[in-house]
Each structure stands twice: as C-alpha cells, then as structure tokens.
Image (cartoon, rainbow, N blue to C red; front, side):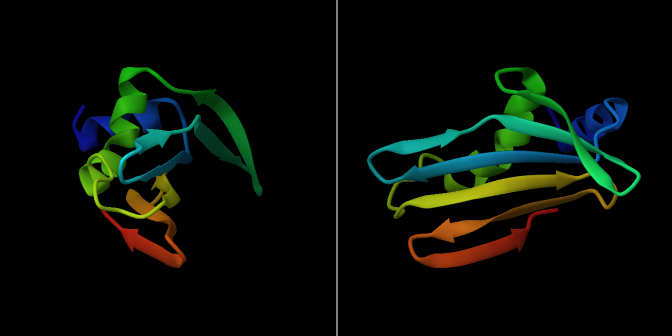
Length: 106
C-alpha cells in the first residue's frame, strides 16, 4: 500500500493520529505492537481502533522496516511511528540505546 493510499484510508476512517509502537535489536530482530487509531473530538483525543495484522497495519508499520530493516547491528531501539493526518506527517521517535531520537520522515 503506497503512502498516498495510507493517508486516504486514514481519512476514510476519520482518523486523526495513528501510532505504531516498535522495538528491536541485533540478533533478535524487530517487532511492532498494537496499532492505535485515534480521532480528535473537541479537545480530546479518543481511541477509535486497536489492531494489527491487516493491510493498513502493514503499511503503517512500513517506516519501521524501511528505517531499521531487521535491526541488524543496532542496540536496543524502542519507539513509535506516528502518522498525523492533519499535517500529513510521519514522525519516528524513541530511544536507540541510551540516546533519544526523533525525526520526521514525511
């Protein structure tokens, strides 16, 4: 699923933010956790869906695998990929070993 299709699907679901937790390290590989789709209602961010294992889930996880592949050669990395529909940004943030990181991918 191309990124444009991901944005369109999130919009169709009326999703404001999608969050994908992940972790991984050398010799252990990586994994993603339960994906959270949330919508802004007034001033509150409300969780609409929790899931994994569908085509959209694989696309939302894509930046993790694009960035870290199988986590070969990396210390323990824990973080989140956050897709924000309002500004169509993808942010990846967390800790690589003892060092915090944050970057905008799109």
